[in-house]
Image (cartoon, rainbow, N blue to C red; front, side, top):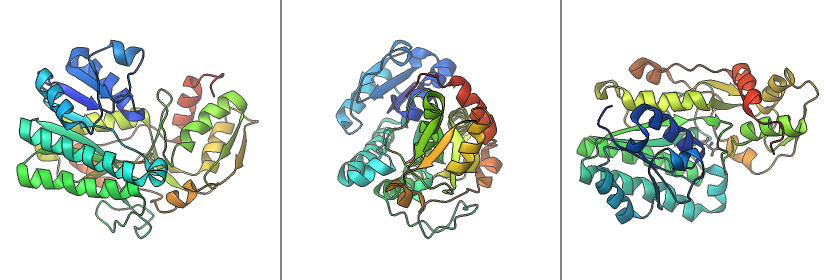
Length: 317
Ligand code: AKB
């Protein structure tokens, strides 16, 4: 909306980078402050203000909010599922304290809206796997998943207790070609396209039949901005919305890629990430998001494959 100034924490991450660029197009470069622990290069640095900051530096974030009179915060900084299992204490501190700092600062400074991403990782092995409902059993058993589930509770609590306008989506695995993901269990679904283009071969760390919910980045960006721009009375869920587009297995992506690269070779060398994936749903029921604020996805597997292979450079690693 005109007059809004947005702070994007975690602006160099897989989703944060593309969200920042899209919001700068819509709101004007000067009105979207990119913040991250590392300095970006190129268009992210040149198209608007940048602040080098750690999300755990609450006083530093407060200074940025005051300096730019920020009206909306997106906190995209997180340690993902696979890295989180290696560094559980760091993951908990970053994912949990980063969120709580954001919520506290937003409440204290009358920030109008906060966005925070949850994930399918908030579900667990006892959750129904097919068409997982919005409200269901949630017993995550990864640190990342536990932090997402607890984070959802914090978001709803700030809404109920203080009326803070917090909005959130449970992202499936996100596939993109601009900024790479790092440390996630669904990262294979990005790597496979890069290796298909550069080497016509990929060795997958998940089993051939590991069905997971996934989404192409353009859909994820549009969903996030549509949720944030929807009228507040349409947002009935203040923990986090289920969000879906497609579900596929590594074998299914392999077949989709073979339609373009017939001699593509897909092999398997399964590692610890398979155990994480096994605790997550295979498909998601996102009917609340569709009914409440009109969510509709645009990309299925084959449409995404065609677009990915057009954009991923042949010489890529
Ligand atoms: C991960 O794999 O950890 C993330 C996620 C599903 O939240 N991509």
